[in-house]
Image (cartoon, rainbow, N blue to C red):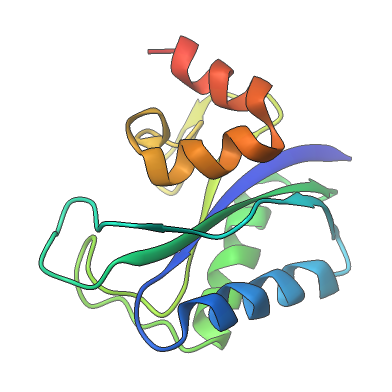
Length: 143
């Protein structure tokens, strides 16, 4: 089993309910076990600022999925919950980002680990520090 950390966010619809549903779907996946979840925080948008504030949280999981398969599982949950990608950094019903996977470092066309912007985003770091301070510090130390 590998340990991985996810960042979840939403800013349209009912964000707290959507985060809870995404967590329920992650926990129901046969190859994912939720180890910890942060509280939900409200944050201003990042990148594209003319949109509603976000509800954000972090999750720590154990998984037997490879990094790419975990990414696909997260994308499947987003799609099944109704996410449609209209614009980069735009409003979203649900967003599940793979932030780190053990201490794997990789860069492919589909996935970069650790997440290339995690160290710059308080909406990732604040919830992550709540459940995995050592991982948050590892992300920061890499830059």
